[in-house]
Length: 276
Image (cartoon, rainbow, N blue to C red; front, top):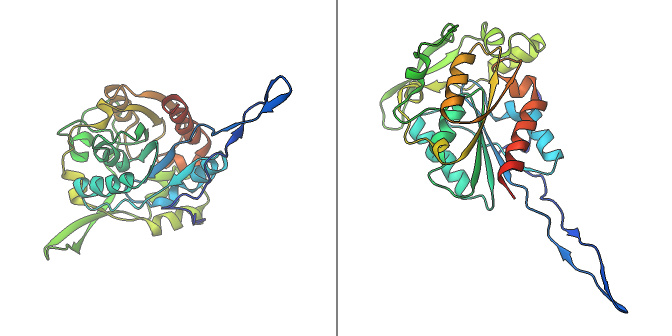
């Protein structure tokens, strides 16, 4: 699988200062330069059973278009902890931010803003957008038309820092290509993604969301119409509840990997609409 070395510390340069036109006043000319409008930093938060490299095709396009990109690792250890970690990343970024979440990463960005005035937009890509009191478990249990089967998660144990034993979930590698990619990528690419998946702790599934950032931050949402991990109708429900500007694209759950062009367009639209 192609990896992106820039993940975790976007390297694209900000737009260069642009020279303004020369105004001629009599026999002399006064030429001045003014800085171009600052493009926001785009922070890409991955979800469960993946890692930041899943954003590689989108990160490449954004950086080519002049955006600074950061794709920090999502710890996947619990919604509260994960949101606090992403918030710590946001606090160290100067200037405006477009905050993007995929899948479980949507729940994380919903809780990570914490009234940070630099976050100008939230972009949900086939993502959870919980309200206060929601958890991934309760959202997945919500009755929607054309519900989908539960993801084929396999539990295992891991040692927690407090010495207790925790439970984490991994997707059955044999079923990963069909559930997450709809078999749209070459076999060995899909198998590599399945092998590289990072497990999600059960705490991340069961912990409830706080007050959602989408109540105060302008939001955008992409529904993956062929999603087999989150019901497309659940995605539509969450997008409507968040009053998000919504687009629908034919594609699987890992749509940012298989269909990076429309994902990039939505992120850049969010940047254009909210950062001036």
